[in-house]
Image (cartoon, rainbow, N blue to C red; front, side, top):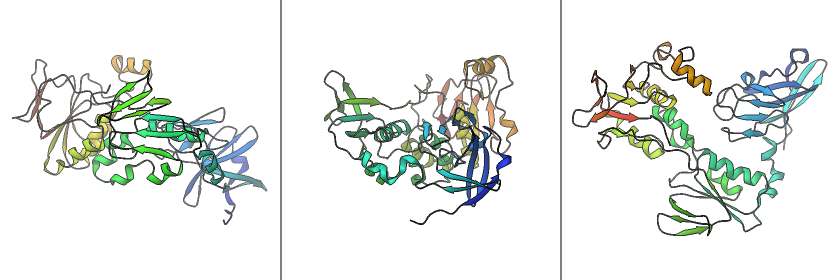
Length: 374
């Protein structure tokens, strides 16, 4: 294999202690960090959604992504916590005449080197079942192999897909701009190489923890030695009348998204009940398709930026952290119905009504709901 060539990156005196700096090396973004009198170089973008890691938080050799809090070890490139599913590429570093040079280390990252394959080979007969094949289930399966588990690793999913990027259903996928294949987290060969079995269209309906076995909807059973339940949440249907009408949708799976997409060509107006992150992401995606969007939500502030208890209290008691859709004209250009919960849906009139004294009616071709999950 041809050795990577050394590339000039930056002047050494430009690197300050524990201050990440991004540099461009050809088409690649490389992150350099001076820490404990050593210079480390890793890929500069998070493998999750491509955030620039120089804007992240560095603490004790661990860098936290500024977008979704994935964490990486800057000394090895290894991913320490999700939602990222991959390690960062690692670069070798040398300094000559005050100039820092880098070149890509052998292998994309330590966990993906060819010599590690033997560690993944299955030798034992213990069975580790993972119910759920989303990002959490997939990450757990891969971690078991990375840590040397040599029994059978089996992921079970009621869907017909290999693990995919579920959060993107309300983003790029709903715009219609990306293909289905782009959403798949890893190709089938990836799981086969690690001897991870992915059983699709297997719906689990029961678990017997005493006998250590699970029951499927098609009435067969499977024994296990260890079990991880990583099924995630499900959308909660609002307790209002009219959700049985055609045109009311939940959004969680590929099937849900495909159902919505199949009707958008003849849709001019959509009502979304709930204006959290998923509601706004869906609104943004639908606006890109030139569909009129109405957001219905309780409270007068559209959603909070923070996640702490204090942030949530400020959402109620203050407006300093409120998201302002009006600042993003075009991307978030939609009608907003605040202090409204959506109390009923009329299928015949295709309207969504408010149970307040105003009895406001919001016309809709399609009703989409994303309040919260359970």
